[in-house]
Image (cartoon, rainbow, N blue to C red; front, side):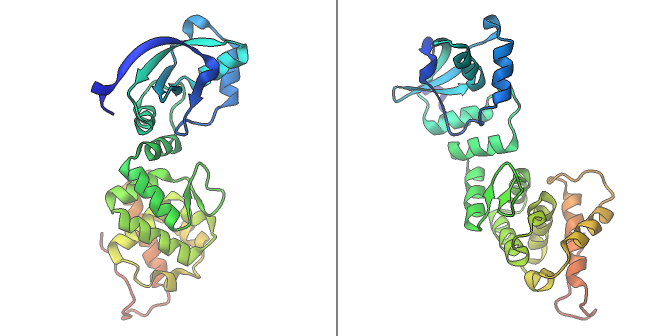
Length: 260
């Protein structure tokens, strides 16, 4: 966003003309009700909008504006920014710190995607190409909510590793929900980083996912299981290698040796 091209004014605008962009969080009805029930005009603050193509797009204050609509207000005083493109607006929303609720990983990812952030765009492209989609819930196999794990894989290992990780997970454990949780994602990425595809699908297809998970819990005595923790990624990879090697003779060419 080029600040030199952006001007700022304060205007009284019709509440009904304030639009919510695609990068915004879904409206939280409970929060709107809370604002409306204890409404104090003196504490309202000024919603921030972008004037683009003759329309006003909310950057900050969507819930406050919804509360105003509920209370019957027709106009509201706003800070109006001019000179922003749609990607600029999404980037502004992603980086500004004045939201009343903390942004979730999904909120940040979606805004980054809308603003053209390379990491978010590449993750979305690779994820969709492999039949998955980034979302807020992992209740179904194809939805992946472990966004930070995807970002970790790309920044630590690269985009090609994320692509190969998805391919192995789909080819090996199609339809099994737990394999798209963060530990499986980054642990498999560590495997790919060390060994490539090897004979992963051939060796792992009929392995018991629950056993792999329980072995990992026993393996990882450390309490830090965040995606960014190298020890966690190595621990899960060790478990995968151990299950991969089960049934192979000591001198098998397929056998893998993991070195820390």
